[in-house]
Length: 548
Image 1: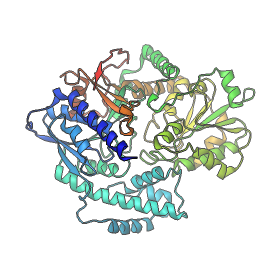
Image 2 (image 1 turned 60 degrees about the horizontal axis):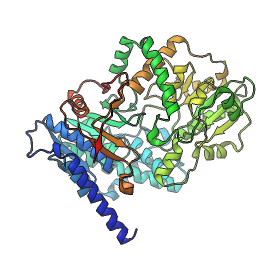
Image 3 (image 1 turned 90 degrees about the horizontal axis):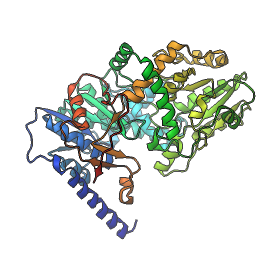
Image 4 (image 1 turned 90 degrees about the vertical axis):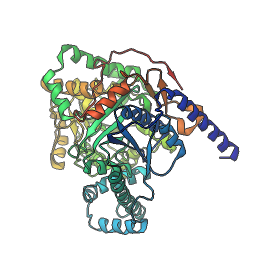
């Protein structure tokens, strides 16, 4: 970028900071409140948008008597000013906080640890004093290299993994030192898996700190909040907590909600609102059964199973346990089973987020799934076909067309069973084991299911009811409507890449009865694992006026 371009971007960023400070002017304290406890915000993988959101959380927690501590990789005047705009904040920096452990020492330790790892599972299970070094480092490696699996014979892969483990060890040391120094009673995270955020997440839990994660919900105007303990740290943020699931089962769904959830699932796909922040429904159409089967190349009344592929390199190892060491191996071995079962048709659905992810990464849209299958099998037989990420077929078209679904732990495993369609899982950590999915416990049992899948009958009414109850909780009871601010995933403020996602503050942000106050009280409560939406029926139509 030219000097003029850099000066212009800096000026626009300064303008955004000025507008941000003005939008939160009613939240600032004139002095530091008396704090009896400390909350730490992990911003080791910070973006301007996540910092703005957490600055708003910080304001409300400050009102509840919390000292605000923010961990950044290094000093960053822009991010610091965003937090300081809402009140006094203490900043801590990960760089230089490793207490003598340097890169060369960490690299040697990483090499020693890798010598003891004989299989991919050994790497995934690698822990050092309770820190999940292997999961974090492996996730970081495949994500940065955009690969589906590690090849131990590939020197580039091995070197990258060793460096990632070394970085994880450095992050572990830094996290231990900072958490001991800060002594937080509450930790707030957005990113909690990749190094170095994953190590800070582990450090908080190992120190007995109450930990909360917030993430985007399927509906773009809502957020999800989950509380974690050491026992539940491998749960997906979309998973229902045990207490939430027990409460839902006690209350039941009822006829009204049973109908409402089906209406909402349909309407979200029809409107394109489902995961709209990732443009998953962009350019998609809903086709009827006959048209869908024609587009899929299905002849007659042959049964159809869809293999719902995951993003091979994204959040691969964070959650639960998996039958296979990575998503690519699962995909290849599932397709191997599909090739062997000629009694039905099999469709491999490449995840549509490939389009959005490639755009966000500034990379060409390589469909790694197609590459992996081509390398493994060459040309697929006629009864096994690929549905690409950029297909014009809306996923909902499949719901009235197919007979079975297969996934490791994808969202589809909560959706298809609502329509009576059996789903076979190959991993835990999200919804498996709750009575509405087929969950083979071993690779051998999984392959047995594939061989006879065409004989599997549709779900029974009891199983469908449990699926709808779980989906109601996950999709519509937990997503929390944000009315005091909006996280705009398509903001592109001033055309700046750093502000492609931005926060718009509403006029009611400082109200004592605001959503922010409700969220902060839940964070401080230390009880329920899931924050439940105040508008449980999701019928709120209130519109907020935003200004910045």
